[in-house]
Length: 163
Image 1 (spheres, one colour):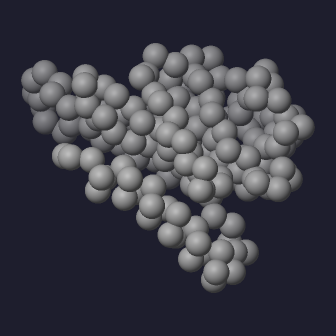
Image 2: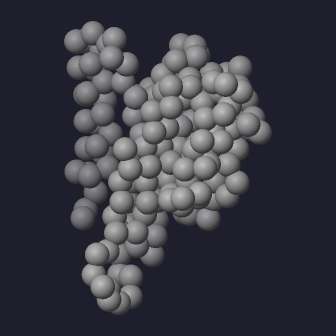
């Protein structure tokens, strides 16, 4: 799934809101390291056509056996942050690649696993990009707990701050 925020005016004038120009991609890759990390090359090839600011990955399948600085995971011009499955097994997990020149702060959300929240600041305005993975095998109680934790994060971000 790809999300574009583009101005459709023929002569839009100066850019007043840079957030409408962020290009964000989400891809459920079902393992970044599969086939000797070839999916990273596929993402890079796709990105060469679209030049995304953020590339959000779900089902990364990364764990502690794959170092954060693993060269096969690197993409030129991008930083990467990841949140592996809490059991440290090769399943689930998320990561985000973002352009290294962007002003991005990773928001600490210890109450949520397999969740990354990036605060991005452009021209003194702040916005958020997130990627989340929730296992389809969660039971009702696990889902309710996850939903409550997500609500807490959203409340902190949007209801506790003045607009």
